[in-house]
Image 1 (cartoon, one colour):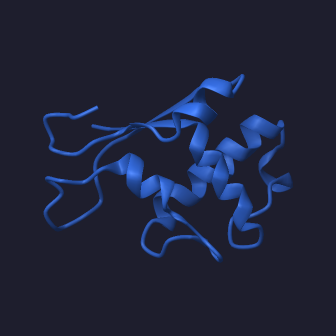
Image 2: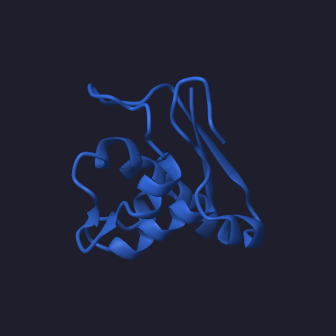
Length: 103
């Protein structure tokens, strides 16, 4: 989805999203960046955000809590029962079922 603000957002991974019994839409206030975002594709960024240590540096303040909360929703866990992405990087894969919209 191309928006007036110049960057693409939407469903991160259509196959994971369609196959998930729970659909999650995160609406984020703005892009936290001081450079040119005219050609950003948030869906591509979020497909590549996972690293061996969890989340790509610079994105963890926004997407760390989203990963944590999404994992809890999907796995029926309370906050303290959820592993952190830096301890268990594979939980970052929960982003694949999300739809991200930046206003």
